[in-house]
Image (cartoon, rainbow, N blue to C red; front, side, top):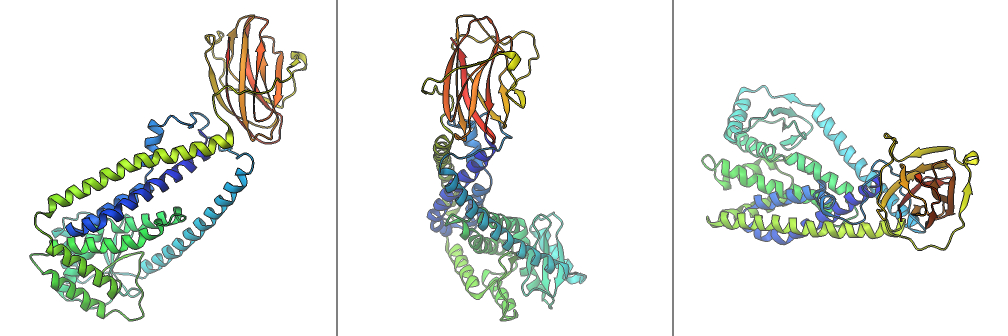
Length: 470
């Protein structure tokens, strides 16, 4: 299993599965919104995980029996054949350039976040701390969360990825305002919204060549706020009405300077009038929803997950099929007998057998008894052969009068290689070729033999093939 091949396969399958799941999310979104905005956000987080966690790749690795190698995991020496290297090289460079750009942009935002966190003062006001603990206990949050004042921000927000902190602008807040602020921001912490924002940034950077991935972050921002509003209103139903909840947020937003910009990296109390208007509309739809909507909401969510998993399975297999086609075209077909023109067999006696710089063995001979192979039993190999190196198999016993059938496919196909056998006296018989070729070696003496591939070129060669005797 070539490492670069598998990295490419992971990215390809993640693109397939994430895009398919995102498409189903867009279809189910209006139905879920009528039931509960939190379901829209929960399923969107599921889509994020389909982009990040290689579920599809694991399915393929466990069940796919196509052109996936089982050896050479740590040999990233794959080389395309013909013009394929140029096409994939250009595509890879373009992808890498945009990846570096996106990572650089994210790092700029991260540095800005660090600077904001640097200029903060722990909250020492007993009234503020008491209200914070009251709301925290009401939401049954037990993790440690800090609260700080910051003169660099205009809106209350949550920062951090695993260790959350709530930052408050330097201002005087009433108890009601503190209740709304802390409930909203603590719900963000409970939902782990900052973590999923980081995940969406990662998705946008890695999958920047797909149309849907770049919209993940704005959608996470929008629907995390809507889900947070619903959870906060439900938690405060005995304290404050939904109408009053948003009135408090509007009052706080009016204090924000007009030149301030929404901060999409952090989970904030408010971003803009437009986004707040959408949040209010979503809340109205939630309030008007029927009480019996919970069952239908659960059914819709379950249907979405099942549909996504099913299509993920199918998309993963489709991606694996595309991967197989690319690599079979580039490296030749593994494990099949190759029809090649008759090659001239060369004999080299043991005394002159020094046409290599080093010799490597696939398996050490730990036992004086060579492994027994039945006639017609095929043994496959997948070796990486360095320039000037002879790569040999383990010993196996062959009787006089039998033939050793050896075939190999080498990549890149422009490199000259030898394939041959070594007899019990270390005499060598080989044929020379490039790409895919094979030969039948007649055995005149009973004994222990090896097959080998020798690289006569100047670059590493990936040799796949098989041998048997009859």
